[in-house]
Image 1 (tube, rainbow, N blue to C red):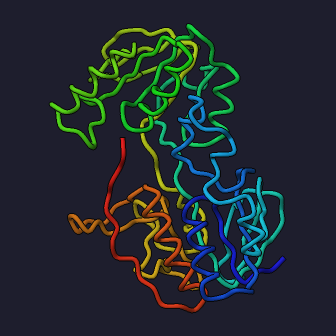
Image 2: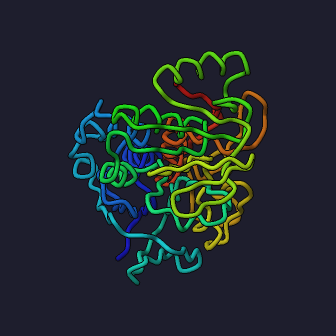
Length: 321
């Protein structure tokens, strides 16, 4: 199968790309490839879905007819495994080959799980980044269950907020000396910690899990914790493998120019959490894994893929808590 435009990934950057393309090119064929089987949805809402504050219908990032209105073919539930930039083909796990004229890598990020001895022996172990994570957790969580969350950053605390709804016994551990260490100073962190502790969440800071034996964690301070459910929320890493397979330049993420074209290859663009951006607040090159950044990068890429001229020069980190 051959398409004018192929997008790998199906979140905010993909939506931006589709809308950017269609502003210039109303007819060129577009295909979206995603290893998830869902209509484009808002990832930050997964904690509110687990908590029950939003419905599955409300998870949609765009209307139900988004693909139809924009004449987009979806290849959902299919994993792309490599990109050949010379033949301009994407290889799928199924063995299929998808040809493109212009390609967007909107591959996002994956959970970072530090090496911890015996982790594979844990029965109910989850990340907290995707809709399928919520579905898997819902199958096992019940009132009174002991939950251990590794990571007191935004992802870990969003998971804690959602799970509190189930009446679980919850402990959050982090190697840092305070919660939300990347965004809060010590005083503010203490205020937030007291608020969360008032909801029954326990914190163990300055320590992390060293090893596991079934559902018992041995911490770096020597303590042992028994649990029923383990959630790892230590951080994320950009998905750069497809860019590397295509010959694109990669450091901590995929390197692009201001038109979102991947450096080192032709006809391939990248947007979203998988990329490196220049932070306008300090001039440093870094991953900035937030939805507004992803959408703007995707939109910029789409405009340029369709022959337009657009630049994205306003990346900066921001979060709502």
